[in-house]
Length: 297
Ligand code: NAP
Image 1: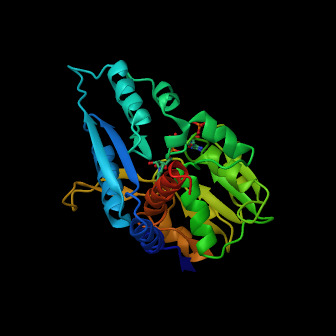
Image 2 (image 1 turned 90 degrees about the horizontal axis):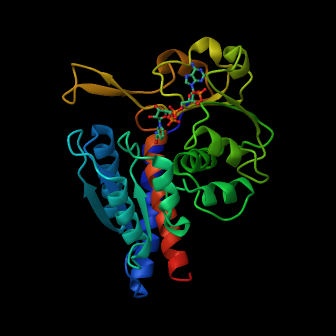
């Protein structure tokens, strides 16, 4: 059984990006620049954004964090957030930016996503990028699915002709991953099944998977009886589970019952250290791509 090490793979890719950036700097270009907008003080979002800023430093990028306050007593006006998005859209020194999700409930996330210039949408969430992806045109690919595809590629796991079953149909993981893996070509050519909460006989479907992707946000949901012998299992889930023995008071739990599922797999991603670091590295790749397009490279 192979443990698919996303942390190590992400470190390798960040080093590759940093080497490319160093060459660009030698040629006189400025550093690629990623901005992140963080609304309020959600604990998970704070951590994700901090990790993205840290990854920027490792890749030789400039980063900017735009913090906007929002509390129950004093909620941020959507117009104020849209103003900030517009500023970043118009700033020639910013190659790409993200608005960290989830946003406070009173803000319409889709409205904000659609306000981002698709040419700077390095999260790949804008419908223009989603649409281009689905018809196989060059675009910014959604970061988590792109990270999964890259991880499979770097571990020599072909998807060609394989039965891939994805549990979860969110706009940021399940749907774009299905779309990427069904495309014609080396990193696609899979026969993809997407499951969700209305899927009948889920275990029967998941047991048919050569490659099983769990993206539901339910700790330990995928049990041994749901996985075929020799399957490749990709665990996207990251749920904070209370854990008094940890300084933070929680631990991250995946959607797969790792201890019992891992022994029957050909390969499996751990949580943490699997898909998570690859998501961040995809964002870095997209930012470098945005920089290159911005400079006609
Ligand atoms: P989401 O938007 O909450 O969607 C969850 C999906 O799971 C939905 O499609 C839902 O079905 C399906 N589902 C829920 N319960 C189910 C059940 N009992 N049987 C079958 N399907 C079920 O989730 P998400 O944003 O994609 O995130 C999923 C997990 O991945 C979360 O833990 C999240 O934190 C994690 N995540 C990790 C990364 C990373 O970088 N590692 C990135 C993104 C997300 P319906 O559509 O029918 O409701």
